[in-house]
Length: 62
Image (cartoon, rainbow, N blue to C red):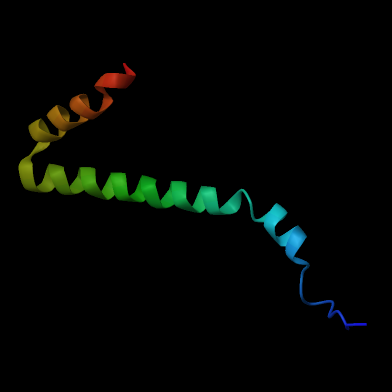
């Protein structure tokens, strides 16, 4: 019989509890990347180029 340490969580509970958090972390990374990209576009190309790119990206959703 193997000895189970209390400090180690069982793998089943770990996957169930951590199932949502990686998606939130990836969503945060994507949001920061979009924000940084938009700020970079504004700084390098000006606000007019940002509006053109934003309207082109958001066109399918309007």
